[in-house]
Length: 120
Image 1: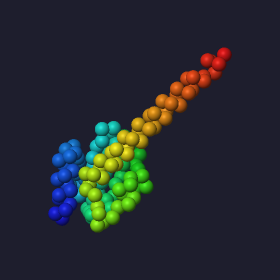
Image 2: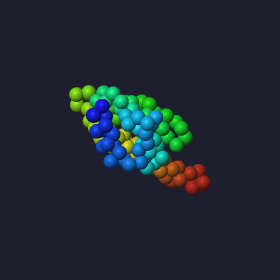
Image 3: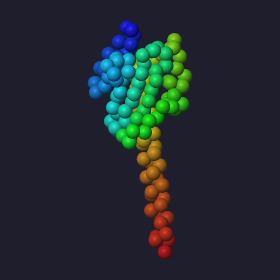
Image 4: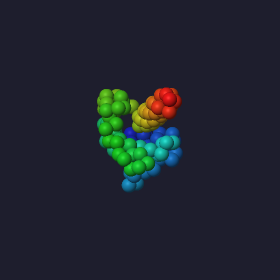
């Protein structure tokens, strides 16, 4: 239990707006700056934690281990800290949203450039 308490303290220090789930220090919900909630259950740490991502519409993403390299290659002997994992997941989320925004802006620019009204 000491290792879980240690991880909890690190998470609370780094992310003070963390919410306990069912009053367990090993199950946390962390709001991100972009209104997503990161739900992490690390009750069996250093085994791989269960991570769920929920967007503002309530849509749930459970397959983060396919996208997050630390989760994909998780090894109990070499487990990274929960804080490091959270940083990696948040960077992935923010990077994905930035890429989608840039892609959409690029598509809109092409559409504006080649709109049928401009061709006439």
